[in-house]
Length: 378
Length: 119
Ligand SMILES: [Zn+2]
Image 1 (tube, each protein chain N blue to C red):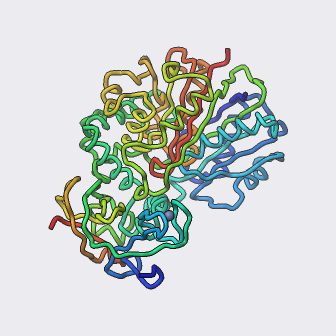
Image 2 (cartoon, helix red, strand yellow):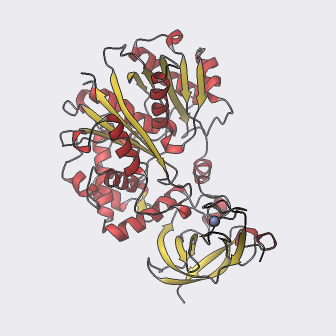
């Protein structure tokens, strides 16, 4: 058993002049304060990676900077699946008795620390350097390919994707830290600039500066602790050219394994934090996991199913699409929000009194999957 | 037809190559010197005839670099090549999912790339 005992999240957007270590430090400071812990209490440290601060040893670089002397530390790289994978590993580390309090932290000035072209090109390198990148492929292009096939087989429309962008924006209007807070309509999404068909600008998450952190502990030391019940992963390919299918992904196996480990079923889930780098990502993951029937994610969103007062509130902070995406910290914000929701600290965003959250992250092009089940303390 | 002696579009030759395992007969696209299914090293490279069926497609409006900006918009697709593997390539405008297509080669940036169009 493990507990998320504290969480920290910076505002996402522009943080001019603030680097990776600054943003990581800000988030870590919040998470430690939230858990009621001191630096000396932290004996485990997991960090992600930063495209603006590539380093062989980011974890110990951060430990020295922040003032930690952990017994266990390293960085992890798994694209968009990194944040929840760190939570999964922290869970196993404390269960194995390797550490009592693992600080998980990531941050990056991805927006102001580099040019737009540089960000796009760095990210496109998840494509194959010989067989894909020379074709002028980008991350939105890889996802656009998936979207085209998924739409072809399941009869989804661009309006359905737009409904998910609108939902995330609606949620973000209630979070002061979100990068985009002006309400949008489906018409706005459909009329936004084409990026890589069928994806338009408002189908795509932004690039952000920001940081996120949480503490995973063996004991329930803070007044607001949330139990990690089960975790799992699934990996099926790296490159979209080599994907076994463009309509079936590893999300189903990962989520069902995590729920089996937790001893729960989908019917028990009353809050969801699902990776939403693009509207298509969110639609596919919701449908793959079973939180929506095939082809129905957008329609359910439009009907209020995933709203704050709906059956399964989803990404109440606004997700990557509207809270923002600073790299590894982007998905970690989903966990931070789930933690707030499960401890009744969502403020004006509070979605009733959810008991069980399912979190799911994806890295690469729907190639790496990681799922977590978290439960309100009883 | 040893793999070592052959080159393809990724190296500037107007050809699409794939590999087949001499033991389990599986076919794949990304070149390596062993079979990713059974691990056997009896791997042979072949030249594909260049015909296939469009599986997925996207029209890229925002190119990743200044050098490629002049080419945008361009269409990228995944094509199921008749010899039994899937590859990424450019598509002619107007091609649709399910269409039968045939490859030619064009200059794109500082490389040559396969472009599939209907016959
Ligand atoms: Zn073989």
